[in-house]
Each structure stands twice: as structure tokens, then as C-alpha cells.
Image 1: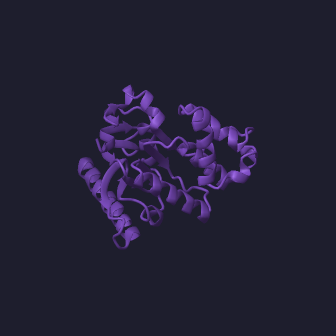
Image 2 (image 1 turned 60 degrees about the vertical axis):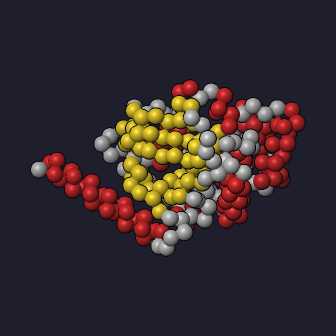
Image 3 (image 1 turned 30 degrees about the vertical axis):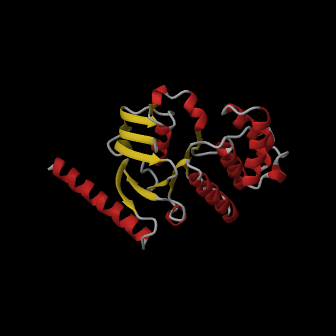
Length: 247
């Protein structure tokens, strides 16, 4: 099976324009898909649905073919970071990484190796004995990413992962995601940084008012212009429909 994540007709409505609506999405092994949209487009809501933090009112979400409510042991193969990096502020970085890896089922030498590797991957070695509360915002983001990826997940779900990262951190993340996809991981990243996701994404999905409205070729020209043109056209279409309903 090449498909790792499948979303079919997922709907979670907060208002007529807030939430996600009848959304379809599929990410296969070795693929990096990017989800881009303006603030309030539904990116974080979708990420929360994919991780079981929210439940869809209708539709289905499957991980490796298993419906989301039935996914149990499979969660150990999922790595995620949504909104803010999770870390115990009084514990040092090494302990935070160790806890994250333990929660994903690692133990013994595998645990120690995973913690050391994830620290190297995001250049956190010199911060391992420093409490998370004393880290800069950028290094806390690196710590959150290292914790999310330490167990070598088969599915990676990241919401705005470049938030607070300096250029060096962005490059580390870019290299990490590309390497993991090349090794067979399925990766979904939400972002509003088109130029950055275009460097690594195999496909860019456009989200507006909770609906997928199209896709962009990451290698195509004028990505930003085509993104805003698509959003503007969709807004005009939605306004026209509302006018027809109101007339």
C-alpha cells in the first residue's frame, strides 16, 4: 500500500465559513504535500482532525487504511507538531526528547540512539542540559520538531513548522523532511510560506474557507500570484453564490 493518509469528505463546521467542508486529501509513501492558505482558511482545523484532536461531523479519515477511531498502535508511527511545540519547561532538552521518544514506544539503546540522532539532526547538542524554558523561541521550535520526529515516523503532520526558525533552522528542517520522504515517509505540512514549501513539496494544495480549491505545481512560475489569483477567484465565486441565495 502506497497510501498512508486518506481524507474522504471530511467536514467539521463551526460556521458557514469556518471549519472544513467535504474535504478530500491523500498522501502516499515518499510524498511531501503542502497545504497553503490564508489565516483562517482551515489549515489548523484540518491538522487537528487528522490527529484525532477534533472529530469530523461527517466523512472519513484513514491512516494506513485504518479508520481514525480504530487507530491505536498505529499512532506510534505518526509524528506531529501543531501550533506550539510541546515541552516541559523545567526539564532539559534531553529529557524532553527522551519523554517524547518513550511515548512513541522507544526504549533501551533504541531510545538513547533516537534522542542523540534527533538532537544532532536539529543541532541541539549544546542545549541538551538546558531547561526548555531557557531556550530561545527558535530553539524551542527546533526542540519540538526533534521530539516530533525522533521515533522516525511513517506519517509526519506539521502545522506551520518554520514558525520562529532562523534560516539555518529552516534549512535543517527542509533537509530532514526531504531525507525522510526519500526513505518512504508520508509528509503533510501546512504553511503560508509558498516559496519555502515549493522547495520541498511534491504537491501544493490550496485551501480557502475550509475547502480545497486547487493545486499548484511547485516548480511552476509566479506561485504567489497564482495562489492569490485562485483565492480571489474563489472568494468572488462564493460572494456570487451568496448574492444569488439572498436575492
